[in-house]
Image (spheres, helix red, strand yellow):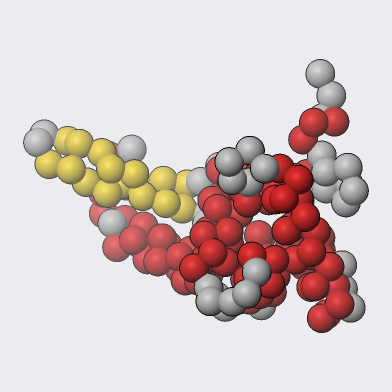
Length: 148
């Protein structure tokens, strides 16, 4: 089995295909693809830098290193910090970027997605706040790490 299905045909990037899947709603993949391509094109026009490169920067900025998982021990539930696997981290980053892009005010999803990717690549935006919040939770519950 090849990776043909998981690599975007136009941009030749697996990350772009994953972003398309996260934007996808109600099976309308062509619409999701158009939204993502337009967002990446807007980033390229604004920055004179590759949209895919900016997306990679954004994902690396947003990707969490640790998260908390609920663990029940003796009737009490503890938030136990755990390291995040790379694939899960990428998925979380893309999910957060898309979620906070949807929450923005603006005209089209492509504009909002481009703005969120831009902000995430530069260390601001809702997705970055979510990552920092996740890291703070893990830091606060570091005492329960031995319950892993």
